[in-house]
Amino acid sequence: MVVIGGGGLIGSELVANLRNRGHEVLAASPDSGVNTITGEGLAAALAGAQVVVDVSNSPSFEDAAVLKFFQTSTGNLVAAEARAGVSHHVALSIVGTDRVPDSGYLRAKLAQETLIEASGVPYSILRSTQFFEFVSRIAQASPDGTLRVSGALFQPVLSTDVVAALADITLGAPLNGIAEVGGPERFPMNEAVRRVLRANGDRREVVTDDHARYFGAELTDQSLVAGPTARVGSKRFEDWLSEAASQPPAANR
Ligand SMILES: NC(=O)c1ccc[n+]([C@@H]2O[C@H](COP(=O)([O-])OP(=O)(O)OC[C@H]3O[C@@H](n4cnc5c(N)ncnc54)[C@H](OP(=O)(O)O)[C@@H]3O)[C@@H](O)[C@H]2O)c1
Image (cartoon, rainbow, N blue to C red; front, side, top):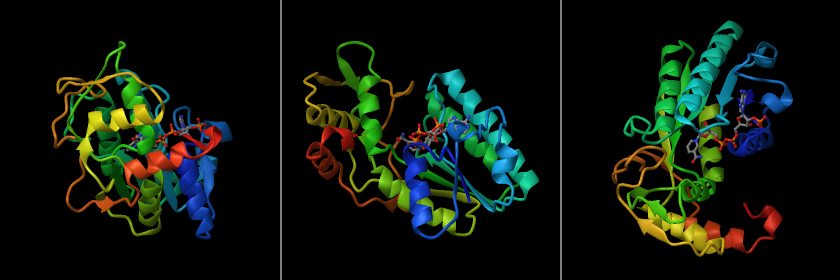
């Protein structure tokens, strides 16, 4: 098996999870000489692989850059998989990719999904809600001193719970379809940002603004929450925050 983006947040945990379950896994990323944009090292990495999991991410979240990243990377990857005879392509996408067209990042993830579906390689797509680890990035996304955050419903999930779902899908037969995973609770996004700031000792005020844009898009209560058949993670946000706060700073992410 090959994990593209195997050095990232999800990738490194997924590689460890699959290896613990006895599988031989190549962790592939530019750091290890495999680049899905330039094609460097790709054919050699895929030689003999049956399953490829793509958990890479764009270095830039700027609208045009992220679209170019996912289109180029996915195009190169599925073409290389077809040549190598890969029998299962697994990708991690985002709940709501098809519901939030004003977000450049979600448009790029939808373009990634479309390329996979058209590739002819048997595939599974897992759409996840936002990771707990990502909530602080939402807080930073606001431009000035005031943090304006939408009060739309939000259902964040621990990365480890996403990895568990992704590992099970990776080891199963191709779905040739889309599954979802989300956290165990839904609450307003501004609440999640407030809780993270409080836990980090950040005293800035979070202003609730339903017109505040989330990576370019206004949200509704339906935009980012998972559907009724989604797999549900077990870790609660509040518990994760208190556990992180009780750990020494180096392990506290
Ligand atoms: N953040 C969220 O809340 C969320 C929610 C749902 C889904 N997702 C999706 O989850 C996926 C993984 O996210 P993450 O936070 O784990 O990402 P991450 O920590 O930023 O890791 C990204 C990985 O992609 C690799 N990469 C970058 N450019 C590459 C290239 N040209 N060729 C091959 N690999 C490349 C990086 O390589 P190096 O290690 O060499 O730098 C790194 O290993 C993304 O596709 C994202 O859209 C995210």
